[in-house]
Length: 629
Figure 1 (cartoon, rainbow, N blue to C red):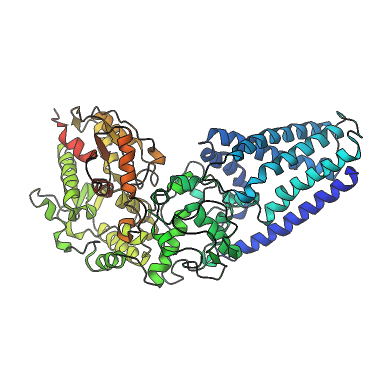
Figure 2 (cartoon, rainbow, N blue to C red):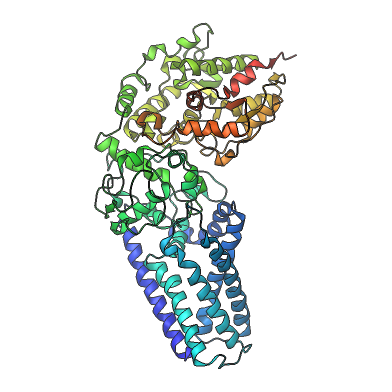
């Protein structure tokens, strides 16, 4: 009976998979054009899946091994099932590997089942709860069937009833793992995910690379994303790759603070917009304070106030914790900024002080509207060299908007002290420097960003320097990673990197210090955006400081809440992100939090005392300078 029915069942499942896959591809292609190298992407996909993707998945060792067993066993099993049961090739060279593949898959499925008995809150439930049963059914049925095919069990083993049970098990498995793969079940992520890796919008992320700079808007075209079909087609593909594991939710500072953002729910709402319908069948955590079932959309319907609220988009600090943690390498932040661009550029709806900040940037080239001529007042007694007087210097010190903030000015003065102690040939732009444009870009105003960037690039082109150094990770990021698209290519260093180089080259000597228990807070735009984790810690080690690491540090560092214009848009939540970060420091009994970002300093010092002291690396080093002999 099985020999007659099984080939027809396999063919039917494969045909339905193809029909569903074509339907899904047509949904993705409703998005905007984006050039990709089809052949190169498909050829690169296996390595991206087996190496790059599993580099992220492997952070959870147990689930990594479970995924290798389950997914690897399934792929190998399907490659062998087709020749064995569709074309009746009963060679031992196929049957024995098939037994191994189905056994491996069964073991993995057992661990998936255990995981789903008491699933973590971040995991979606609903259809995902039936997936372990389908995996077990598929692997066990084909394992027993292959035992019969290989002669290890007799042909009539178990009689017709057992054969019927096997057939039901196979049908259940195929309906989920093949039919569902193309038609929107839990296994959809496997099909969409493979193609997402092949045609990823940021191929530079693979092979150990890094790509974090936002892509410039064509100001003569559509300004941002209003409807799902306004996304690039491979962005829509990326949304469909979501496995609903909730890792992004678990690390999102806005979600933890009770603001109306859950990055997993956001991606699933984009999938609703892609295919049409509502979020009524979504079975994961909601946006804090918002019910499930209200989101409705389609490819041509405006997203904001249909699928998501504007507050959801403005809650994001653009810290990239979600992107860093995503095992499918989905780009949540790109999507959020794309939608912000529409709100800001097309609808003029930047909330709270957002519009005022943008107006200030346009009128005075700084977010607070200060007189541009006062940009160097903080250093009136320092007699800093101006690049327009020198024309050339080894280091151009990019002061950034800390020049207008009294607390940040102390950091800038400390860094100047370090530069002079090391006899660095440096200069500043003075009142020729304009805002880097970071805040405008994160608020969605790419027009203002591009205007500021082009003005800065034109100014920089007049002078000769070897590198730019700044104490501001946000300016560091845009100068290093986002000006290049507009023609500004520079060697840019953050001051933590530059100080570390001075120490390693013995241009700077420091004394050891005793400051009690010190922890270090990784700024998002230095760490996750630019991969710089070691230089700040090396600087602290040179001061004789042993860092007491917070539980969330390095690439998993918790955001201070100051990025992405979040303090400007000021979406209310249940608590402040900065308060949570101070609690992280209190957990390791820190007396001092060492920081390397002016915005982080401002956010953390805004927490009500008593709390640890907040000290920038430049301040700590400047206090311990020793004479160079």
